[in-house]
Length: 206
Image 1 (cartoon, helix red, strand yellow):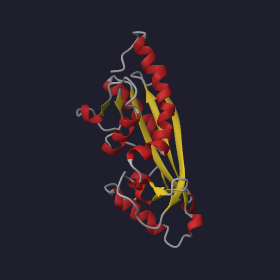
Image 2: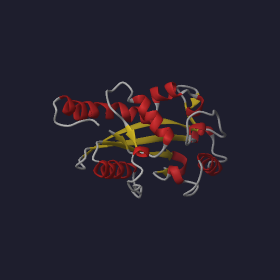
Image 3: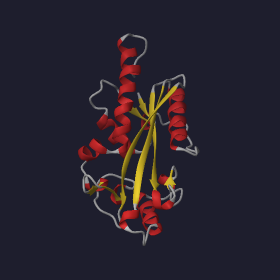
């Protein structure tokens, strides 16, 4: 199976969450000759489906791909699907965080609610896709906290834990995160589609 992402941090999180499944997992780094899939959808679901379908058809392998948006209530849902490039096409994680914090300057603590939404798409080599979703609600802090994780993790606080995602270990984060919640559902699809087909000899999970 292929993870349809070129993001090393994201791939590490997903691989850790799939470690208990008997799958041989590849990333896009194992397929340097295939063209990059352009994420030009207006929704996370559109991007996830496109990445999964195109990668599966290009590689000939089952592919799991995701896209994540950050929806901030006080900003009318921004940055949303554009979270990864909020501060520009070549922006760093820190650039995106700083832009968001600047836009939220002066907004009171009780109005800083936000949520991460991860959409995961699983595609077979013929381009047939199934989709699941995971959501994590929290608040945008006023400054950076923690050094773990990536993306908006240093400024996204989870109330029930009392920490930002960047203050959590990978193990802690993988117990509650939006990506983990989506992946728990995706794992059931993997068991039903890949593993059952592989065990019956109809296809291989590799």
